[in-house]
Image (cartoon, rainbow, N blue to C red; front, top):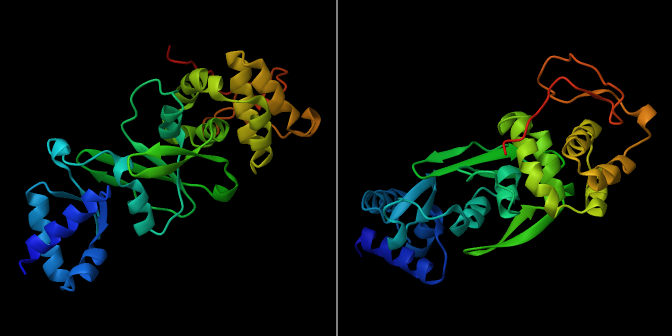
Amino acid sequence: MNNEKGVSEVLDDLQRRGLYGIERSKVEESLSVSTAAVGKALKRLAEKGRVKRIRKGFHAIVPVEYASQGVPPSDWFIEDLMRSLDQPYYIGLLSAAALHRAAHQQVQQLQIVVPKQERPIEVPGLSIRFFLKKEFAATPLQSRKGHSGMLPVSTPEATALDLVRYSRHIGGLDVVLTVLTELAESMSPEKLASTAITESETAHVQRLGWLLDHLGETALANALHAALPTSKSLPRAALDSGAPRTGSITGNRWRILENALPEAYL
């Protein structure tokens, strides 16, 4: 059998079943041909725009309607990709905020939270960044429908805390505050309090509380504050953890050192 034709038939079968991610090893198993032969066939099909190499050993199938983009939307194959990486995951940060209808602008990068470090993926038409989180398993999640099945997404409350946790990696506190102006509408005071209890780093809760007070989200801020130890026992925490520890606490109830003054982009 012509190897390219055989691989193409495997891709067609997967696509008929609504699947758009494929591991090279699975193709080898189904066709009983060598790694080198399958590799050459996939390379030729990639040159024709039939597949896109996402990471070594993993390709996305490109349907005709996405031929000009070169790759289908990430939700068509992300579950298959993460299974191939043998990683649990959830869609988080700005990507989760967008799914909760709190994106100030179109998110160009898929942001994924994982319990083990992964290298970012950058190919034409696709950008995926992985964020390592030690407390991964404790994060409250929701299921959202993707093209090829249900996808794990952090809840609005967990998303808010993650935005604060990784603020310096997603554009800073101005971006976090901007997203919170809309994300707050989807947050529940009770769920926010219960989520805060699972947070191992109290400083992230303090920073989020300060930001919510700054936005005038009193009900959310009060629920968060009630979940914290008494104010007198709270450690001092800088609002911007990466900036010089200047400024003062000025009596705020979060014992936050105000070394930054974030502004929302309205």
